[in-house]
Image (cartoon, rainbow, N blue to C red; front, side, top):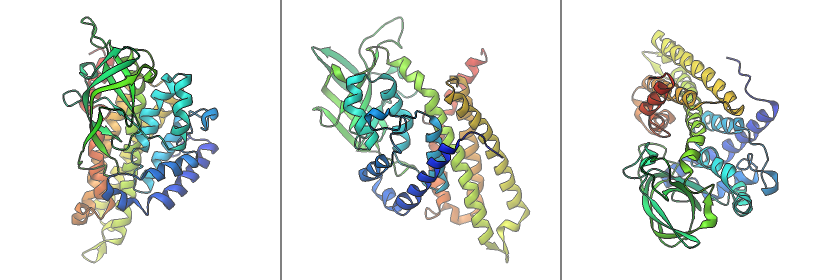
Length: 382
């Protein structure tokens, strides 16, 4: 179906992203999967092309165009090539907004040039071994001691945690018995700070080109100059960015589901069974027709949500709706497409297998499908 979401500038960026992905990412991707991460020099290449700094002000080396649609284009082009861009998506869509919204002038001068150039990699550390979606239950603590905070705690499932130069850590700086959401603060921990250690790199079912780590903080002295925003107000900051984080997951879900269909069409046209192409069977045609219809429904919903987000009007409930629908749709479509590959669909040499394993986490991270239903139900007055 015709889309009217993008301008000529977005399409020019699409051409740039497509060329980069085809030339620099696709050929090296199998090696990155084995290594478990995208090399740092690739981030620098993306920074040099201006891909990482689109939303960063020009005075810091960025493009000065904080338009979320550029992020959408980048995800779509990666999915079209049957790859993912490692922690780039997390850095641009989940972490960078915290710096853009809450960094003061001194912090901008210190960090923004490196973020735009791809020389500073980031992570955000929210999840703890006993705390997932319940951010108010965070137990990591930061106690003010002169002009430093003493940070203690442990974080897990941290995307990009192995390579990160800057880690935004959500820590409890005070306790209010009447408001458990009060008292959380964002502290930027820098690589090399004493007491900050990276634990084991976690082995995942999918998303292989994305390091995921456990992080430990033992009496880490974080200067007060590294506080993002105001002390004790982080819960509101986290909630402000969650709609975009959930929208980001939905963008990937729709784009990857569309790529699964394209891969299944190519395969079934070439694969023969009983002397005839699998694509000629009525079951194949009906399955792919149904999958295509689901993707178009998800795309229409998603494009409307993206437009609302660009206008600053995407609500938390609507972000939950689009994430719930698109991720559940992705699961159905990718599963049905893999079935058309038969036994080969179970082999990791075929991209459909990677699409399948990568898709599973979409219904978990950035808030599980169950949490999305709770948010939606509350918006209905239930």
